[in-house]
Image (tube, rainbow, N blue to C red; front, side, top):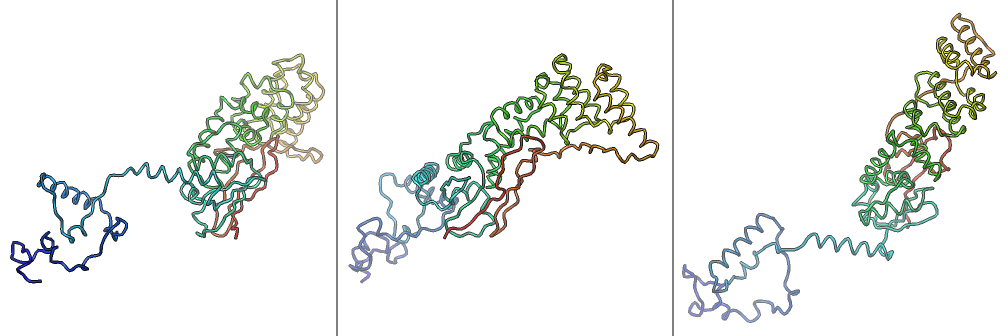
Length: 400
């Protein structure tokens, strides 16, 4: 092109960005653009500060020439960048909505959760977002099946509903099942929420009533946890009016428990007497059965004497008199250094371990290792009724 036909900038050089220079451009020097999608879109990385600066510059340019449209060169347009106002919350909501729609229609699911004989399909993205279960498992985009074992399908569905909806529907009947599944899957938010709920349920003032409720509804796991905590606060609990209404089978189960937290067997003798005195005429017939559960041989000699003086009418029952006399004779021989080989000493009681939940039936999670299944170990119950048998392994396997 000749310099006569080209506009110049302040320095006298050609200004390629000037509108007049476009007339002199070669016909095929720029691609013809008919659609917005045809424009190459390679914006520079987004930086908040630079975006604010560019946005401010655009505003300043607009203010400087309110009545005329700002003209940009191709070079200026190529470097121009700004963050346009968008609703990120709405964007995330749409993402979640579409994922939820896919879940409801069983589309694109790559995880199968097996609870007893029921199968639940889910998305790996949800588990990665809200659990740590796959943190140590190799990242392979294949269909995975997680076997929870013999758990209630409704409890597994409750956990899945939380993962997708963010809602946790828990009550006394499902709290333990949900808690154990959440521990196995490492859904920490549910674990914390359930632990807090269980802690409130098992407050000392609630224990007897929780036991009654669980027995009526046959809620085994919560019953065992409540019973474990009950025997930790044995003396306080047996002063409750509700305890005095227990039937003889419950009282016998309590007096026969190996894990009672007591200072001495004399405490149990006092509890037994308190229960009998509440309805003495009809309950005196149960004395012979209950007194056999008191381990008199682990008392001191003074405590044996206290038992005889506490209620002399008890000595009219032959079994009571025999047990006290035998224990007194054993203690005397022990103090004199003599051994009574024929006597079978009952084992001493020992308090249960502490913790939340204190139930030995509560599951304890063993962290999953790569290519190894996580394991939920179930302990033995401290007292009947025992939880129904469970499969104690939680397997993760890849389905080809």
